[in-house]
Length: 201
Image (tube, rainbow, N blue to C red; front, top):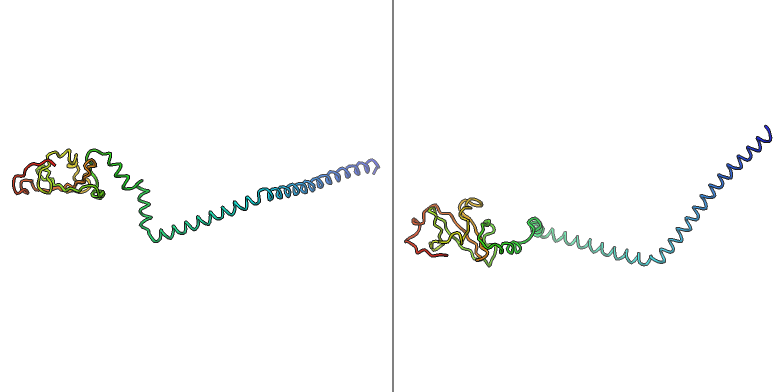
């Protein structure tokens, strides 16, 4: 082989070796530099934020422990009193409580039909029992005829059979009264002992 070829091979080998060495050295010193930067950051972070982070971590752990204890206590109470859980579910399902329902209905000036379960739910409402006879007469317990049916019970007489076949329940918030109207298949004249005085209730 000629000298030129040896020289070219030598130069090529030196170039490849130099390039490889340069890349290896570059990587090594980049790694060393990054480690130094990271260590400086860590020292600075610990010096500046270390106590605060530790304090915040302790506070956070305390809050978590408190929440865990509270959850455990609530779970124990729920086991002891499942009726409270059911009550809470009902309140959430129906969106309120009886007091709110009462306030909502207080806006109703006119009598309206209620369910049998709602009858008598408010202690401050008077409970009045009325009888609706087959001949269309509405009377109270003393067999006194109610003249102004629409004003007293609204259109309740059209609602027999909605909840129960033989009774309708009505609330009048303006008078603070709950009315129970019972259906009687007899006529009023069959029931009354004498011709009653017609008294407006």
